[in-house]
Length: 147
Image 1 (cartoon, rainbow, N blue to C red):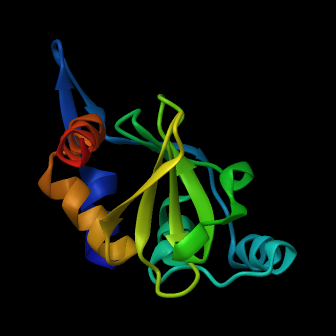
Image 2: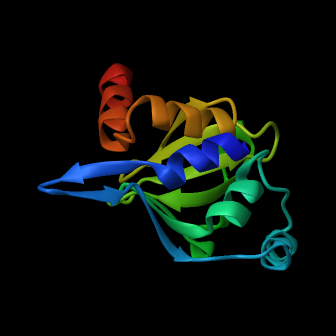
Image 3: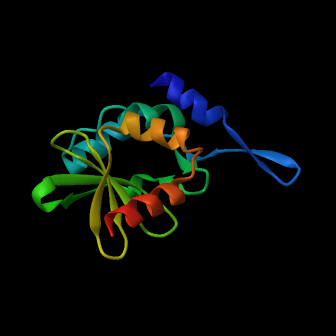
């Protein structure tokens, strides 16, 4: 997990004549802050997610995936069981993990369709890196395949 975090935090994207970081920190968090959040909402973090937040803090990956404490919420995933949302994109889509097995889901806005993205938070980040942080293209490809 440390290597994945390092890759994202060091990644840059060329814009015009400048390179800008892929990750923009909004604010840092602590072990105590994450413990408080998990206790208040009564959940356990998906494998890798708490470590990501401890190392990277709350912030934005390529202005397309936003992590904020206020985005954490437990929701009824129907047949998927209880899901915990942890991030959003600019289109209002939410990202959640299953309390059952840590699977990562996209909750597509506005129809609330739940689409499996990855087996784990770690593999979710690995896939995002592989796709050059092009989250919108990934969501579009998944949405097109589901229709």
